[in-house]
Amino acid sequence: MPFQFVQTSIAQLSDATGLDVASLKILICTLLSFPFGVIFKRLPDQHYTLKNVYNVTVSAFYVFGILNLRSGILTLFISAMGCYFITRYLRTSAMPWVNFLFLMLHLCYSHLHTQFFVEYDPTIIDITGAQMVLVMKLSAFGWNIHDGKQPKASLTQFAQERVVKKHPNLLPYIGYVFFYASLLTGPAFDYADYDKFIHSTLFDDVPDSKRPGKRKRRIPRSGVQSFKKTMQGFFWAIILLQLPKYVNLPYVLSGEFYANHNFIYRIFYLWILGFGHRLKYYTIWLIAEGACILCGLGYNGYDTATDTFKWDRVQNIDPWAFETGQNVHACLEAWNMNTNKWLKNYVYLRIARKGKKPGFKSTLFTFVTSAFWHGTRPGYYLTFVLGAVLQTVGKIYRRNLRPIFLEADGKTPKPSKKLYDFACYLGTQLAFGFISQPFVILDFRKSVYCWYTCYFYITIISVVTIFVFKGPYGKVATRWCQSHSASYQAQNASDNKRKLSIKETEAVVAHVENMLEKDRFDTLGLPPIDVLETVDKEEIDENIKELTIAWKSFRERRGSIKEDDFEGLKDAYNNFTNEINEIFLTKKEEILKKAKEEPKKTE
Image (cartoon, rainbow, N blue to C red; front, side, top):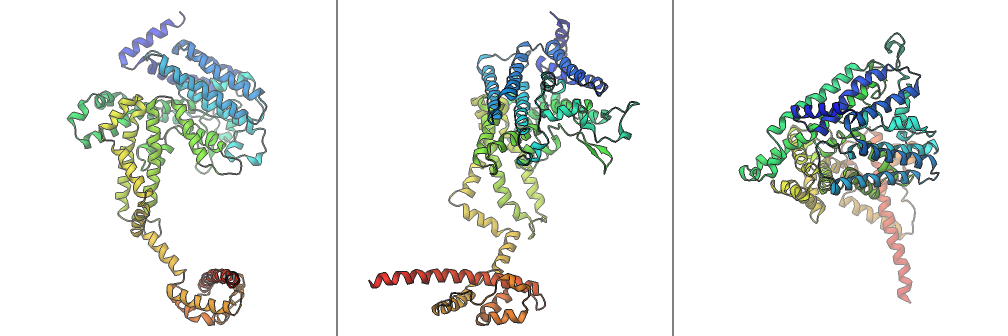
């Protein structure tokens, strides 16, 4: 058997390190992408065919030489060729949706097959992970082809930058699909980026003085940036190898965890355990990003202000932002970034009709897509449903509680804001420790038991919060929060100054009724605001002499208006006339209605 020596060596290394064979194979391929990336950067810039052949050849070595993934590569090939023929030969506006449906159904079949018909084998790589990455790339590719035939004005800026005007031939397409540095774990990226990368136009803005080598190679040096990103990955890998010795999932599910520890210990244990679950993603995504940076695909422009290059084109994770996030939204923005971009730009925004903002239908379809994309096991849905609820709860807290800790301007934090921030941080991180467990456990009963060990506390807090602020006592709770908010009180005071008081309203109503009784259906002699450009103070007082009492009272309550503050006077007068005209129109309608009813009564 070809490459038998490689397989034997990997098995021996697995025994020595304690890593399962499948994970070790993925790690080896990811690490090999670095020397292969060094070679790629030195291929002649104009030899586009050679670059594509090189990418496919390296991927073939991974698949057949290291991964031993013959059946799995067939799965990827079916998705790739199905997409190729649909996007090339189906000439209809529904093409992107047909392509999307084909890819998702094929992925769903793989999920179901793995769930019900395949026994877990630590030596075999689950190809659905690579297929999930491919679904993102190929569904986006369908929309890129479609957008290339649409008027530029009808596209978003994001879509304009990624259009594909001409359907690619098979070789560059296969090079894009089976690009070695992101074949198994991502990151996903659009075909337009790959095309620019292969043709080196991605590096057009690199100054000549920054181009390396005697031949002035177009791809700039990226070794340092790649090394930093890779070392971050290894940092998390070290913690990943050590943490399970102290915190692990089998202990949580054993029964001893619940019996031997109190509630506070258990919730913090799940927090650390959730952190441990994220470590493998931090490790592999950061190392894979480092490989993409080294070969040049991570290049994202030259910053003339700082004289530096940006290398975040394919960034997929920001561990620091996630681990310090103070709300669910901030954490999700830092997690699996490319998937978030895909869901937003190729699902959420595409569901909405042209010219319409995305609504509930877009949100629901995006949620269903995300759930099916991840898999069909119950644990995924427990995590996603509660995660969606937590986002709603987060919005409620931010809208109602956060203003209490801000000054009247709504921006400057009070000293107590530090306590609010800490509470948000602690609550958010504890919540993720709780909701992330089913995503790893997958089994429904075990997931529910894991939540039971902490008395479903996050679920209960979420339900109670929604009931308090959205239920029958929602207005009471909201008003209580507003009563403790300096910014709301200031705004309310400002609004009250702009409205007539009860006594002022009574005076105006009496005057309006008197005018209407005389059949004076005009605007009470009050000039509109545009006339005020040339009016002076004496003219204003003359026009409202019959409403002097209400006007003076109204001005006095707006204490900020001084005698020489004519702009403030015009603003006050505008508010005053608007209030009067509203009263006038209301009374006018009442009198007209009575006038129409009186003849009917006499009959």
